Image (cartoon, rainbow, N blue to C red; front, side, top):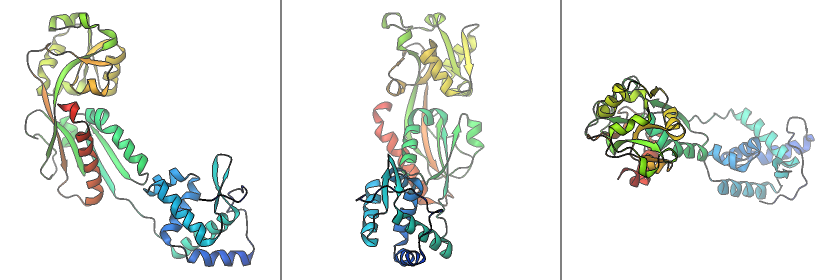
Length: 325
């Protein structure tokens, strides 16, 4: 897009064009495709092509192409740079004023986005899904998404959402959500192992039996205390008379393992998520496993938007297959 005109302040509210000029720009504004008009107005409001593209859920290259075509259509430069900021040219201000007037005249409705409610087990949200959800929001700033963190079976039973991602203790999905769901999908099997930070444990001195844990502080995420599949570790915690801490926040437990010289129970993929942590296999005789399940509400109303979230989740797990092998 050519930016040939000298910098001009973005002052559509204070600058008043002559009546003849307003009539000319009004005629031009009426001929502009409504979608292109929206691209122009959002770009003018954001003052940044990248942010405008996010808000419109399109690529920045497409946005700039359409705006360049708009400049060719009206035969005026509409944007210019003022320092490092993008502002409207004087002609751009004329067009913005007329498009806003037309929008009020036509009473164009705001395009409402469907609200999608997503419930995710807290460890999965924190360790696996969080980064990709943030990436989704960076690409599409118009999404309406409610994210609910599940820290227990009770929390799972208390919600009704469009998409749910939970952990079960057995091969099957039960106990699952309390609302009707489509057939659930198994995404991964997680093995749980005690973990310690590499910085606090040399290879030659790492504990290899329960008795060796006496020299370490143990930390437990409190919701895990109610999980039957994790009973071998829970018994170790219950038998401790000292050097044990229980926390309600999953992120705090991770920090205590990373920075507090604690040993805590984590899914086996944590060494891939955080290479500063190392698993301690062989400490306990019994295996501890849980299964990750995904399901969609059987009465979902916005199938396309829900499908986008489901595709994001399944792609995330496929992309991290090596974490679960």
